[in-house]
Image (tube, rainbow, N blue to C red; front, side):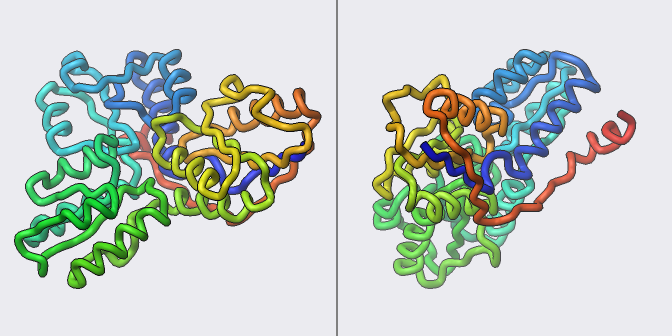
Length: 312
């Protein structure tokens, strides 16, 4: 067996920032630190933080008054921020700057009187947060059929935004359809899909050609991880999305397979290495790394945490 280890893979700059923020907050304030929704969509990361004293909640009402609350990397609506203020919470914001960019675009277009078409997945934390910025102005579109059904009051005042973790190919198909139906539709000068999402998808496209099996490390509720598995499956590969080697079986593989391993943007490198070690034990696999693109993006900690980090 040969393992091809995709690069780039795993944590993106936004996830690194959010994870570092929660680590620092727990160290500085002590447990419990409450987190609105999962800090990132990864079971391993969430379980690790639970052991350190993080408490993940789905409602601000679950947080005792005066406590410390962190907003997850996926962002929250103004309604949640207001609720946190009302409960006198110390609110720390670990929203990914690329998600914040989409929120600011939504606010801008709504103020200008545009109807905003948001391409994304119903119920995803990021989509809920973005739509909360201007609920009366935003329409969610999940696929090309939704574009066909779309009716708007003024086609000359229409803008499009996207969830940051979509399949680039799927999003482009929907965008093409929107532009065909609504030629005047506006969009930001720089697209919304995250650089890391795009890079990991490009790596799977390039490297899966010579693979028999593709293993994606990531949780089932991770949008960008799920897209990586779909990309591989669409190319006719046996493709698995798993939290770690415990989710794999020996008979998922053949002794002579070439296995491409990658990881979604919220999956830690430790689970990648555990999966490699498992395949090496079971199949005496050899490993090579294939780099499709270098990444050097870093995001600073949220302002209130920067002073704390200097003092640590």
